[in-house]
Structure formats: C-alpha cells, structure tokens
Length: 189
Image 1 (cartoon, one colour):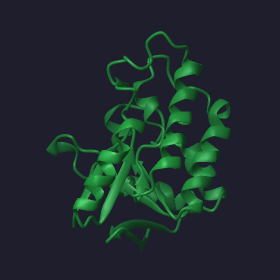
Image 2: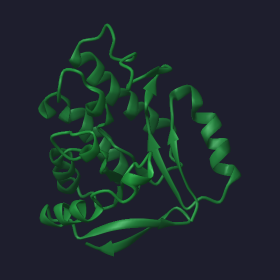
Image 3: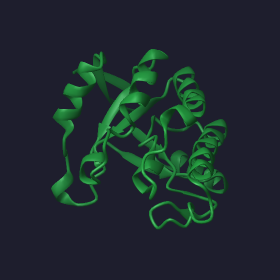
Image 4: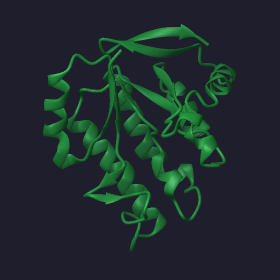
C-alpha cells in the first residue's frame, strides 16, 4: 500500500496536486498543520490572537482548503488545533456551525475522517476529533472513518487502535475503513 499525509496550505495546493498525480496512491490524509506558514505546535499561529480568533480561523481555513482540493481520502485529526491550544479546549458549540459545514462537505464528496489516537499520547481530555464531532458526523450521515496512531516514534505505532474501535462501536458506528486505490473498504468494528 502507498499512502501519504498532505499537510496543505492554500499556496501549496498545486504542489500537492502534482505530487498526487505522480504516484499511484491508495490513501491520502488531508491535514493542516500551519496557516500562512505559521505553525500551530510552536504557538506562532496563535500568537496575538484570542482563543476565539485562532479557533475560528483554523476551521474557516480548513473549509477553504476543502473548496480547492479534492484529491484525498480522509480529513486527518480534524480538530488538531485543540492539541496546541494553550488556553484549553475551546467550546464545541462556538465552532459547531463551522465544523458542521466541513463535515457536510466531506460527506457530500464521499470522503471520510480519521480518528487520531495521538490524543492519548498528548494527554488530551477527549478523542481527536472529539466525541461531539464524531457524533455530529454520524448524525449527518458520515460513515467513512479510519483510525490512525499518528506515530512519530515506534512506541506509538498502533497505539490505542482497539480502544478506539470499541468506542466507535459504542457510538453506533458499524465499520472502520482502509483504502485501496483511493476507494474505501469497510471492515466491521
């Protein structure tokens, strides 16, 4: 299998499209780790903004990317900004309309979302995306879900996968997915 994570910004879309066309990929994670070349992990993006401003800008930017790029399988760690929010978790209700717009777009276009188990190694208080986002995705008719451990070191490969499968089943999801030639393949939870 061949897969890549595309950490896209608006000005890098063309480069990623060329990369996508260069290889016969099975799977592509779409993510954003920075906006306007400002990283989240080092607080460069958040600096000088209120919690409301950087959370809203994150989701607005993600939606804008989705309007311009479609060569992906699933949206990776949808609420990544939570991992790097120095002020704690921003209330879901405040960004729910933006997240709902993103999820509707993904579902309409036959794409999915990834549950990223890095929430455990980062000590977050919820899954990534959060249970509220997962419930909204299910409520809107979303079914395509992958589970990834986001392992940057060997010790985290496959971390908490079975636990997340059980959680998804409890939430009413029936399947998790893998991909072959960019097509989702359902596997019972």
